[in-house]
Image (cartoon, rainbow, N blue to C red; front, side):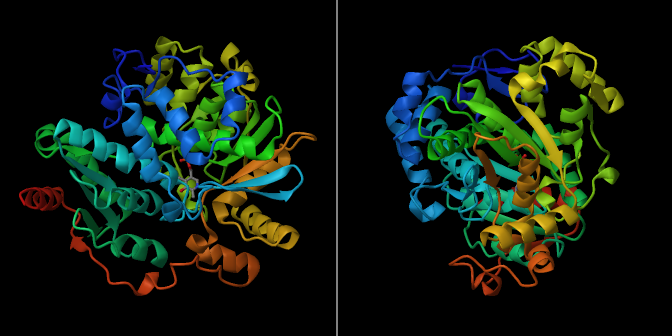
Length: 470
Ligand SMILES: *Cc1c(COP(=O)(O)O)cnc(C)c1O
Protein backbone atom coordinates (compact mmCIF):
# COMPACT_ATOMS: atom_id res chain seq x y z
CA UNK A 1 0.00 0.00 0.00
CA UNK A 2 1.11 3.52 -0.84
CA UNK A 3 -0.44 6.95 -0.16
CA UNK A 4 -1.68 9.46 -2.71
CA UNK A 5 -3.09 12.98 -2.38
CA UNK A 6 -6.82 13.71 -2.54
CA UNK A 7 -5.88 16.37 -5.14
CA UNK A 8 -3.76 14.07 -7.28
CA UNK A 9 -0.41 15.86 -6.95
CA UNK A 10 1.71 13.35 -5.02
CA UNK A 11 3.48 10.26 -6.34
CA UNK A 12 2.50 7.13 -4.40
CA UNK A 13 4.47 7.41 -1.14
CA UNK A 14 5.09 4.87 1.65
CA UNK A 15 3.58 5.23 5.13
CA UNK A 16 6.80 6.14 6.96
CA UNK A 17 7.34 9.03 4.55
CA UNK A 18 3.93 10.63 4.99
CA UNK A 19 3.94 9.99 8.77
CA UNK A 20 5.71 13.22 9.77
CA UNK A 21 4.18 15.43 7.09
CA UNK A 22 1.11 17.66 7.28
CA UNK A 23 -0.59 18.47 4.00
CA UNK A 24 0.44 16.74 0.78
CA UNK A 25 2.66 18.92 -1.47
CA UNK A 26 -0.38 19.96 -3.54
CA UNK A 27 -2.37 21.06 -0.48
CA UNK A 28 -4.49 17.89 -0.37
CA UNK A 29 -4.58 15.12 2.23
CA UNK A 30 -2.82 11.79 2.01
CA UNK A 31 -5.01 8.73 1.63
CA UNK A 32 -4.36 5.03 0.79
CA UNK A 33 -4.27 4.38 -2.95
CA UNK A 34 -6.67 1.48 -2.28
CA UNK A 35 -8.35 0.48 0.98
CA UNK A 36 -7.40 -2.97 2.22
CA UNK A 37 -10.42 -5.26 2.07
CA UNK A 38 -11.21 -7.43 5.06
CA UNK A 39 -13.16 -10.47 3.84
CA UNK A 40 -15.58 -12.56 5.89
CA UNK A 41 -12.94 -15.15 6.68
CA UNK A 42 -10.50 -12.56 8.06
CA UNK A 43 -13.26 -10.83 9.99
CA UNK A 44 -14.06 -14.18 11.61
CA UNK A 45 -10.45 -14.65 12.61
CA UNK A 46 -10.18 -11.14 14.05
CA UNK A 47 -13.25 -11.56 16.28
CA UNK A 48 -11.33 -13.26 19.08
CA UNK A 49 -8.24 -11.00 19.03
CA UNK A 50 -7.44 -8.71 21.93
CA UNK A 51 -6.95 -4.98 21.32
CA UNK A 52 -3.21 -5.13 20.73
CA UNK A 53 -3.37 -8.11 18.37
CA UNK A 54 -6.21 -6.51 16.41
CA UNK A 55 -4.39 -3.16 16.19
CA UNK A 56 -1.30 -4.94 14.87
CA UNK A 57 -3.31 -6.75 12.16
CA UNK A 58 -4.92 -3.48 11.02
CA UNK A 59 -1.78 -1.32 11.17
CA UNK A 60 0.29 -3.75 9.15
CA UNK A 61 -2.17 -3.39 6.28
CA UNK A 62 -1.66 0.38 6.32
CA UNK A 63 2.06 0.48 7.20
CA UNK A 64 3.65 -2.41 5.32
CA UNK A 65 6.99 -0.59 5.27
CA UNK A 66 7.47 -1.00 9.04
CA UNK A 67 8.97 -4.46 9.78
CA UNK A 68 6.44 -6.68 11.61
CA UNK A 69 8.53 -7.19 14.73
CA UNK A 70 9.04 -3.43 15.12
CA UNK A 71 5.35 -2.67 14.57
CA UNK A 72 4.34 -5.31 17.11
CA UNK A 73 6.68 -3.78 19.65
CA UNK A 74 5.32 -0.27 19.03
CA UNK A 75 1.73 -1.49 19.44
CA UNK A 76 2.53 -3.47 22.59
CA UNK A 77 4.27 -0.50 24.20
CA UNK A 78 1.41 1.88 23.27
CA UNK A 79 -1.79 0.07 24.18
CA UNK A 80 -1.15 -0.94 27.80
CA UNK A 81 -3.52 -1.30 30.73
CA UNK A 82 -1.27 1.18 32.51
CA UNK A 83 -1.94 3.94 29.94
CA UNK A 84 -5.60 3.11 29.20
CA UNK A 85 -6.95 1.77 32.49
CA UNK A 86 -7.60 -1.81 31.33
CA UNK A 87 -6.47 -4.33 28.72
CA UNK A 88 -9.73 -3.76 26.88
CA UNK A 89 -8.27 -0.27 26.04
CA UNK A 90 -11.64 0.84 24.60
CA UNK A 91 -14.32 -1.11 26.53
CA UNK A 92 -17.96 -1.21 25.47
CA UNK A 93 -20.85 -1.10 27.94
CA UNK A 94 -24.59 -1.53 27.32
CA UNK A 95 -27.09 1.12 28.42
CA UNK A 96 -29.99 -1.09 27.34
CA UNK A 97 -30.41 -3.81 24.71
CA UNK A 98 -29.37 -2.30 21.38
CA UNK A 99 -27.79 0.86 22.84
CA UNK A 100 -24.10 0.86 23.76
CA UNK A 101 -21.30 3.21 24.79
CA UNK A 102 -17.77 2.79 23.43
CA UNK A 103 -15.42 4.26 26.04
CA UNK A 104 -12.55 6.08 24.33
CA UNK A 105 -11.54 8.42 27.13
CA UNK A 106 -9.62 6.25 29.57
CA UNK A 107 -6.18 7.41 28.37
CA UNK A 108 -3.77 9.79 30.17
CA UNK A 109 -5.65 13.02 29.33
CA UNK A 110 -9.17 11.60 29.60
CA UNK A 111 -10.16 12.32 25.99
CA UNK A 112 -10.38 10.12 22.91
CA UNK A 113 -7.45 11.85 21.21
CA UNK A 114 -5.11 9.81 23.43
CA UNK A 115 -5.95 6.62 21.51
CA UNK A 116 -4.30 8.01 18.39
CA UNK A 117 -1.79 10.40 19.92
CA UNK A 118 -0.16 7.79 22.17
CA UNK A 119 0.56 5.72 19.05
CA UNK A 120 1.86 8.78 17.22
CA UNK A 121 4.42 9.43 19.97
CA UNK A 122 5.92 5.96 19.57
CA UNK A 123 5.74 5.99 15.77
CA UNK A 124 7.45 9.39 15.56
CA UNK A 125 10.21 8.33 17.95
CA UNK A 126 10.78 5.13 15.96
CA UNK A 127 10.97 6.77 12.53
CA UNK A 128 13.11 9.68 13.74
CA UNK A 129 15.61 7.32 15.38
CA UNK A 130 15.95 5.29 12.18
CA UNK A 131 16.68 8.46 10.23
CA UNK A 132 18.91 10.02 12.91
CA UNK A 133 16.67 13.06 12.87
CA UNK A 134 15.05 15.31 15.43
CA UNK A 135 11.67 17.03 15.40
CA UNK A 136 10.41 20.13 17.17
CA UNK A 137 6.65 20.03 17.42
CA UNK A 138 5.12 23.49 17.55
CA UNK A 139 1.43 23.87 18.30
CA UNK A 140 -1.27 26.14 19.66
CA UNK A 141 -3.98 24.78 21.90
CA UNK A 142 -7.00 25.90 23.81
CA UNK A 143 -7.30 22.54 25.56
CA UNK A 144 -7.60 18.89 24.51
CA UNK A 145 -5.26 18.55 21.54
CA UNK A 146 -2.29 20.17 23.22
CA UNK A 147 -2.43 18.06 26.33
CA UNK A 148 -2.95 14.82 24.38
CA UNK A 149 0.13 15.72 22.29
CA UNK A 150 2.25 16.53 25.34
CA UNK A 151 1.30 13.31 27.14
CA UNK A 152 2.13 11.35 23.98
CA UNK A 153 5.51 13.00 23.36
CA UNK A 154 6.80 13.37 26.94
CA UNK A 155 10.17 11.71 27.41
CA UNK A 156 10.45 10.71 23.73
CA UNK A 157 13.94 10.81 22.24
CA UNK A 158 14.53 13.23 19.38
CA UNK A 159 11.31 15.15 20.01
CA UNK A 160 10.61 18.46 21.73
CA UNK A 161 7.15 19.97 22.10
CA UNK A 162 6.56 23.73 22.15
CA UNK A 163 2.91 24.25 23.00
CA UNK A 164 1.44 27.74 23.06
CA UNK A 165 -1.71 28.33 25.08
CA UNK A 166 -3.60 31.50 26.01
CA UNK A 167 -2.59 32.44 29.55
CA UNK A 168 -5.47 32.07 31.99
CA UNK A 169 -8.02 31.11 29.31
CA UNK A 170 -8.23 27.33 29.81
CA UNK A 171 -10.15 25.48 32.48
CA UNK A 172 -8.34 24.81 35.77
CA UNK A 173 -8.29 21.12 34.98
CA UNK A 174 -6.79 21.61 31.53
CA UNK A 175 -4.22 24.13 32.75
CA UNK A 176 -3.08 21.84 35.54
CA UNK A 177 -3.00 18.85 33.23
CA UNK A 178 -0.63 20.52 30.78
CA UNK A 179 1.49 22.78 32.96
CA UNK A 180 2.19 20.14 35.59
CA UNK A 181 4.31 18.08 33.18
CA UNK A 182 7.93 18.23 34.32
CA UNK A 183 9.53 16.46 31.35
CA UNK A 184 12.55 18.24 29.91
CA UNK A 185 11.35 17.91 26.31
CA UNK A 186 7.99 19.58 26.96
CA UNK A 187 7.77 23.39 26.85
CA UNK A 188 4.53 25.04 27.87
CA UNK A 189 4.37 28.64 26.75
CA UNK A 190 1.58 30.72 28.30
CA UNK A 191 0.93 33.54 25.84
CA UNK A 192 -0.40 36.88 27.13
CA UNK A 193 -3.27 36.87 24.67
CA UNK A 194 -6.07 34.76 23.23
CA UNK A 195 -6.01 31.49 21.31
CA UNK A 196 -5.88 33.28 17.95
CA UNK A 197 -2.64 35.04 19.03
CA UNK A 198 -1.13 31.63 19.73
CA UNK A 199 -2.27 30.28 16.39
CA UNK A 200 -0.94 33.35 14.54
CA UNK A 201 2.48 32.83 16.14
CA UNK A 202 2.53 29.19 15.00
CA UNK A 203 1.50 30.16 11.47
CA UNK A 204 4.14 32.87 11.25
CA UNK A 205 6.88 30.47 12.34
CA UNK A 206 5.68 27.80 9.88
CA UNK A 207 5.63 30.35 7.06
CA UNK A 208 9.28 31.19 7.69
CA UNK A 209 10.55 28.28 5.60
CA UNK A 210 14.18 28.87 6.44
CA UNK A 211 13.54 28.82 10.20
CA UNK A 212 11.20 25.87 9.81
CA UNK A 213 13.79 23.76 7.98
CA UNK A 214 16.68 24.83 10.19
CA UNK A 215 14.90 23.89 13.41
CA UNK A 216 12.94 20.95 11.96
CA UNK A 217 9.56 22.34 12.97
CA UNK A 218 6.61 19.95 12.65
CA UNK A 219 3.04 19.62 13.89
CA UNK A 220 0.64 16.93 15.12
CA UNK A 221 -2.64 18.19 13.76
CA UNK A 222 -5.81 16.28 13.13
CA UNK A 223 -5.13 15.64 9.44
CA UNK A 224 -2.26 13.29 10.29
CA UNK A 225 -3.08 9.98 8.60
CA UNK A 226 -1.63 7.82 11.39
CA UNK A 227 -4.11 9.33 13.86
CA UNK A 228 -6.94 8.25 11.63
CA UNK A 229 -5.45 4.79 11.20
CA UNK A 230 -5.19 4.35 14.97
CA UNK A 231 -8.89 5.15 15.32
CA UNK A 232 -10.00 2.49 12.83
CA UNK A 233 -9.19 -0.22 15.37
CA UNK A 234 -11.90 0.58 17.89
CA UNK A 235 -14.67 0.45 15.29
CA UNK A 236 -13.72 -3.19 14.66
CA UNK A 237 -13.31 -3.90 18.38
CA UNK A 238 -16.72 -2.42 19.20
CA UNK A 239 -18.34 -4.29 16.33
CA UNK A 240 -17.12 -7.59 17.77
CA UNK A 241 -18.23 -6.54 21.25
CA UNK A 242 -21.87 -5.96 20.30
CA UNK A 243 -22.46 -8.70 17.70
CA UNK A 244 -22.51 -12.48 17.86
CA UNK A 245 -22.05 -13.24 14.17
CA UNK A 246 -20.11 -11.66 11.35
CA UNK A 247 -22.39 -9.99 8.86
CA UNK A 248 -24.73 -8.44 11.45
CA UNK A 249 -24.98 -4.68 10.98
CA UNK A 250 -24.11 -2.05 13.58
CA UNK A 251 -24.52 1.76 13.61
CA UNK A 252 -22.20 4.27 15.27
CA UNK A 253 -22.85 7.78 16.56
CA UNK A 254 -19.79 10.04 16.66
CA UNK A 255 -19.40 13.48 18.34
CA UNK A 256 -17.67 15.34 15.51
CA UNK A 257 -15.57 18.43 14.93
CA UNK A 258 -12.71 18.02 12.46
CA UNK A 259 -14.26 14.81 11.08
CA UNK A 260 -11.25 12.69 12.13
CA UNK A 261 -13.06 10.25 14.39
CA UNK A 262 -16.02 9.55 12.11
CA UNK A 263 -13.72 9.42 9.07
CA UNK A 264 -12.00 6.45 10.73
CA UNK A 265 -15.44 4.82 10.90
CA UNK A 266 -15.85 5.50 7.20
CA UNK A 267 -12.48 3.84 6.51
CA UNK A 268 -13.51 0.79 8.58
CA UNK A 269 -16.71 0.60 6.53
CA UNK A 270 -14.79 0.88 3.24
CA UNK A 271 -12.62 -2.02 4.45
CA UNK A 272 -15.75 -4.13 4.70
CA UNK A 273 -16.87 -3.80 8.33
CA UNK A 274 -20.69 -4.17 8.25
CA UNK A 275 -21.51 -0.66 9.45
CA UNK A 276 -25.04 0.46 8.67
CA UNK A 277 -25.12 4.08 9.73
CA UNK A 278 -22.46 6.58 10.72
CA UNK A 279 -24.22 9.34 12.63
CA UNK A 280 -22.27 12.61 12.48
CA UNK A 281 -23.20 14.51 15.65
CA UNK A 282 -22.37 18.21 15.88
CA UNK A 283 -23.07 21.01 18.34
CA UNK A 284 -24.21 24.52 17.37
CA UNK A 285 -21.23 24.67 14.97
CA UNK A 286 -23.13 22.56 12.48
CA UNK A 287 -21.02 22.81 9.31
CA UNK A 288 -21.15 19.03 8.91
CA UNK A 289 -24.79 18.56 9.84
CA UNK A 290 -25.69 21.18 7.24
CA UNK A 291 -23.71 19.32 4.57
CA UNK A 292 -25.22 15.90 5.26
CA UNK A 293 -28.74 17.34 5.37
CA UNK A 294 -28.53 19.67 2.38
CA UNK A 295 -25.42 18.93 0.29
CA UNK A 296 -24.08 22.40 0.92
CA UNK A 297 -20.63 22.68 2.55
CA UNK A 298 -20.25 26.17 3.90
CA UNK A 299 -17.25 26.98 6.09
CA UNK A 300 -17.71 29.60 8.78
CA UNK A 301 -15.62 32.68 9.41
CA UNK A 302 -13.70 32.80 12.70
CA UNK A 303 -16.25 35.31 14.03
CA UNK A 304 -19.12 32.90 13.28
CA UNK A 305 -17.74 30.04 15.37
CA UNK A 306 -19.86 29.82 18.50
CA UNK A 307 -18.18 29.03 21.83
CA UNK A 308 -20.12 26.10 23.20
CA UNK A 309 -20.09 23.76 26.18
CA UNK A 310 -18.73 20.98 23.95
CA UNK A 311 -15.69 23.09 23.01
CA UNK A 312 -13.64 20.37 21.31
CA UNK A 313 -16.24 20.37 18.53
CA UNK A 314 -16.19 24.15 17.98
CA UNK A 315 -14.87 24.30 14.42
CA UNK A 316 -15.22 26.61 11.43
CA UNK A 317 -14.36 23.87 8.92
CA UNK A 318 -13.79 20.13 9.18
CA UNK A 319 -10.20 19.48 8.20
CA UNK A 320 -10.54 15.73 7.49
CA UNK A 321 -13.72 16.12 5.43
CA UNK A 322 -11.76 16.22 2.16
CA UNK A 323 -10.88 12.53 2.60
CA UNK A 324 -14.54 11.52 2.58
CA UNK A 325 -15.35 13.80 -0.35
CA UNK A 326 -12.55 12.10 -2.32
CA UNK A 327 -14.34 8.76 -1.90
CA UNK A 328 -17.78 10.30 -2.45
CA UNK A 329 -16.80 11.70 -5.87
CA UNK A 330 -15.43 8.33 -6.98
CA UNK A 331 -11.81 9.13 -6.02
CA UNK A 332 -11.45 11.66 -8.81
CA UNK A 333 -8.73 14.12 -7.68
CA UNK A 334 -9.71 16.64 -10.38
CA UNK A 335 -13.18 16.95 -8.89
CA UNK A 336 -11.78 17.34 -5.35
CA UNK A 337 -9.25 19.97 -6.45
CA UNK A 338 -12.06 21.86 -8.22
CA UNK A 339 -14.32 21.80 -5.16
CA UNK A 340 -11.56 23.10 -2.89
CA UNK A 341 -10.69 25.86 -5.36
CA UNK A 342 -14.34 26.84 -5.20
CA UNK A 343 -14.19 26.69 -1.39
CA UNK A 344 -11.13 28.95 -1.29
CA UNK A 345 -12.80 31.40 -3.65
CA UNK A 346 -16.31 31.61 -2.21
CA UNK A 347 -16.22 29.85 1.17
CA UNK A 348 -18.56 27.07 0.07
CA UNK A 349 -19.45 24.41 -2.46
CA UNK A 350 -22.82 22.87 -3.13
CA UNK A 351 -23.38 19.26 -4.20
CA UNK A 352 -27.18 19.45 -3.78
CA UNK A 353 -28.11 18.90 -7.39
CA UNK A 354 -25.19 16.62 -8.31
CA UNK A 355 -25.20 12.81 -8.49
CA UNK A 356 -22.60 12.89 -5.68
CA UNK A 357 -25.13 14.09 -3.12
CA UNK A 358 -27.54 11.32 -4.10
CA UNK A 359 -24.82 8.78 -3.30
CA UNK A 360 -24.38 9.78 0.35
CA UNK A 361 -26.79 7.08 1.62
CA UNK A 362 -24.51 4.46 0.01
CA UNK A 363 -21.85 5.57 2.50
CA UNK A 364 -24.17 5.28 5.50
CA UNK A 365 -23.83 8.89 6.65
CA UNK A 366 -26.62 10.67 8.51
CA UNK A 367 -26.34 13.58 10.96
CA UNK A 368 -27.79 15.63 13.77
CA UNK A 369 -26.94 18.69 15.86
CA UNK A 370 -27.52 19.78 19.45
CA UNK A 371 -27.74 22.95 21.51
CA UNK A 372 -26.55 23.62 25.05
CA UNK A 373 -30.10 22.96 26.30
CA UNK A 374 -30.07 19.58 24.50
CA UNK A 375 -26.79 18.64 26.17
CA UNK A 376 -28.05 19.51 29.62
CA UNK A 377 -31.29 17.58 29.01
CA UNK A 378 -29.41 14.57 27.63
CA UNK A 379 -26.94 14.44 30.54
CA UNK A 380 -29.89 14.58 32.94
CA UNK A 381 -31.90 11.96 31.07
CA UNK A 382 -29.00 9.50 30.69
CA UNK A 383 -28.23 9.86 34.37
CA UNK A 384 -31.84 9.32 35.43
CA UNK A 385 -32.37 6.37 33.12
CA UNK A 386 -29.06 4.51 33.36
CA UNK A 387 -27.27 5.94 36.40
CA UNK A 388 -24.15 7.09 34.50
CA UNK A 389 -22.68 10.56 33.95
CA UNK A 390 -21.58 11.46 30.41
CA UNK A 391 -19.64 14.50 29.27
CA UNK A 392 -21.01 17.22 27.01
CA UNK A 393 -19.48 15.90 23.75
CA UNK A 394 -20.77 12.39 24.36
CA UNK A 395 -24.16 13.94 25.10
CA UNK A 396 -24.18 15.48 21.61
CA UNK A 397 -23.56 11.98 20.22
CA UNK A 398 -26.28 10.35 22.32
CA UNK A 399 -28.82 12.96 21.27
CA UNK A 400 -28.14 12.44 17.56
CA UNK A 401 -28.08 8.65 18.00
CA UNK A 402 -31.58 8.72 19.43
CA UNK A 403 -32.99 10.12 16.19
CA UNK A 404 -31.30 7.47 14.05
CA UNK A 405 -31.82 4.23 15.97
CA UNK A 406 -33.47 1.37 14.11
CA UNK A 407 -35.03 -1.80 15.48
CA UNK A 408 -32.70 -4.80 15.36
CA UNK A 409 -29.56 -2.70 14.66
CA UNK A 410 -27.30 -2.05 17.65
CA UNK A 411 -26.31 1.61 18.05
CA UNK A 412 -22.86 2.30 19.50
CA UNK A 413 -22.26 5.84 20.87
CA UNK A 414 -18.64 6.94 21.11
CA UNK A 415 -17.71 8.47 24.47
CA UNK A 416 -15.02 11.03 23.66
CA UNK A 417 -14.21 12.63 27.04
CA UNK A 418 -14.69 12.16 30.77
CA UNK A 419 -17.24 14.37 32.53
CA UNK A 420 -14.59 15.56 35.00
CA UNK A 421 -13.15 17.77 32.25
CA UNK A 422 -16.40 19.71 31.82
CA UNK A 423 -17.49 20.11 35.39
CA UNK A 424 -19.56 23.29 35.02
CA UNK A 425 -22.13 21.79 32.66
CA UNK A 426 -22.37 18.62 34.73
CA UNK A 427 -23.16 20.77 37.77
CA UNK A 428 -25.77 22.66 35.77
CA UNK A 429 -27.40 19.38 34.70
CA UNK A 430 -27.12 17.29 37.84
CA UNK A 431 -26.66 19.83 40.63
CA UNK A 432 -23.31 18.41 41.65
CA UNK A 433 -19.74 18.16 40.39
CA UNK A 434 -18.56 15.05 38.53
CA UNK A 435 -16.17 12.74 40.36
CA UNK A 436 -12.49 12.95 39.52
CA UNK A 437 -11.13 9.69 38.11
CA UNK A 438 -8.60 7.81 40.29
CA UNK A 439 -5.16 9.41 40.19
CA UNK A 440 -6.42 12.90 39.37
CA UNK A 441 -7.43 14.04 42.86
CA UNK A 442 -4.23 16.04 43.42
CA UNK A 443 -4.01 17.39 39.86
CA UNK A 444 -4.79 21.00 40.68
CA UNK A 445 -2.22 21.14 43.47
CA UNK A 446 0.74 19.76 41.49
CA UNK A 447 3.72 22.07 40.84
CA UNK A 448 3.55 23.83 37.47
CA UNK A 449 6.25 24.33 34.85
CA UNK A 450 5.64 26.94 32.17
CA UNK A 451 7.01 30.15 30.70
CA UNK A 452 5.06 33.34 30.06
CA UNK A 453 5.50 35.17 26.76
CA UNK A 454 4.15 38.23 24.96
CA UNK A 455 2.39 37.41 21.68
CA UNK A 456 5.51 37.98 19.59
CA UNK A 457 6.87 35.91 16.71
CA UNK A 458 10.44 36.96 17.47
CA UNK A 459 10.04 35.89 21.07
CA UNK A 460 8.91 32.36 20.22
CA UNK A 461 11.63 32.00 17.58
CA UNK A 462 14.31 33.02 20.06
CA UNK A 463 12.82 30.70 22.66
CA UNK A 464 12.94 27.70 20.30
CA UNK A 465 16.44 28.52 19.03
CA UNK A 466 17.77 28.75 22.56
CA UNK A 467 16.29 25.40 23.63
CA UNK A 468 17.56 23.64 20.50
CA UNK A 469 21.12 24.81 21.13
CA UNK A 470 21.39 22.63 24.24
C1 LIG B 1 -11.47 16.30 19.27
C2 LIG B 1 -12.71 15.92 19.98
C3 LIG B 1 -13.92 15.65 19.29
C4 LIG B 1 -14.04 15.81 17.79
O1 LIG B 1 -13.36 14.82 17.08
P1 LIG B 1 -12.99 15.06 15.54
O2 LIG B 1 -12.09 13.92 15.19
O3 LIG B 1 -12.29 16.39 15.46
O4 LIG B 1 -14.26 15.03 14.76
C5 LIG B 1 -15.02 15.25 20.02
N1 LIG B 1 -14.98 15.16 21.38
C6 LIG B 1 -13.85 15.42 22.07
C7 LIG B 1 -13.87 15.31 23.55
C8 LIG B 1 -12.67 15.79 21.41
O5 LIG B 1 -11.55 16.06 22.12
